[in-house]
Amino acid sequence: MSSLAEKIDKLFTTIRPNGREYSYEKVAAECAQLSGSTFSKTYVWQLRTGQRDNPTKRHLEALAAFFRVPAAYFFDDCTTERIDSQLAIASAMRNADVRDIALRAMRMDDNGRRSLARIIQEVSALQDRSRADTHRGRPVDAEE
Amino acid sequence: MSSLAEKIDKLFTTIRPNGREYSYEKVAAECAQLSGSTFSKTYVWQLRTGQRDNPTKRHLEALAAFFRVPAAYFFDDCTTERIDSQLAIASAMRNADVRDIALRAMRMDDNGRRSLARIIQEVSALQDRSRADTHRGRPVDAEE
DNA sequence: GGCGCTCGTCCACCACAGTGGACGCCATTT
DNA sequence: AAATGGCGTCCACTGTGGTGGACGAGCGCC
Image (cartoon, rainbow over all chains, first blue to last red):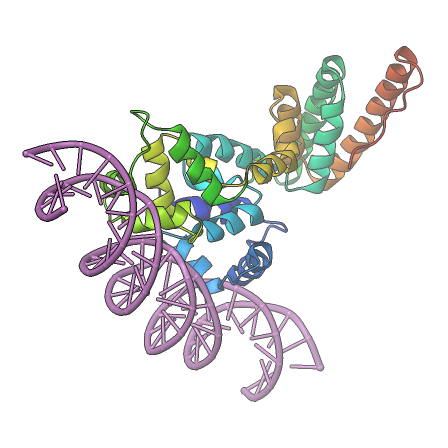
């Protein structure tokens, strides 16, 4: 995990609004607007597939702005790691309900969070059991 | 102090080994070696004087390496800040309890999440009230 | 089935990022 | 004062970063 292509690919697969990946055209159009210059979908594709790997500052800025990531993500590897972990969590937060829950939880104090965690544990255990009952035997594995 | 030229100029004037500034030729030669590709003194000059302002990733990397600064230095810092604030959700998730809650919530189905959201609403409302009592008067406003 | 739409892939071209080399200036050196 | 050498500046060219448009595959719709 060090090439530019891999990093860009990671952005595509982790940052997706409706479960679906952004199309190259969408990214290009948005980036063009962000940078005030042109940005072709072809080039986005080339960058992701590693056919081009030496974009200009302007292109990197636009891409970074679009994916809401610091431009440093494309360079330094240690910041890359940090961003990646944040990205993983962010992808878990795709679901609006989950996000809402998390935001509320964030505003609570430690005591509140702990008791909330206990409650959730109960609820999810309950759910697991009922699920195991309905579709017999299929263990509930974490999705994606 | 926002243009690339100004930033590069600052590197020249501040980073100088023997009181004397690096010559364009010296920088170019060193950068060429660092990047493994070519790097002309003319281009260094053009970048510093603002005649060119859209270098490629490879050139930025070489320049950053030569002057011993992170590549992020060449990009707009306020954008980086803005990005960080927009990743507020992710940063909120640094709290282990919150993360745990969100991860559990993620595994639940829609019904579970909705009832969970209701429960949390109750709990946090309870908390808000008690908080309002202690530091009297200040209403807790909803974010975003 | 046939039509229209969107998307990913590919290629031939264009513009500009990046280069090489020439020129002139200012210090040293003799 | 003439010669040498290092440096910044400039310009015309080249290579490649970047683009537009064409083509075909997949999918929903009438």
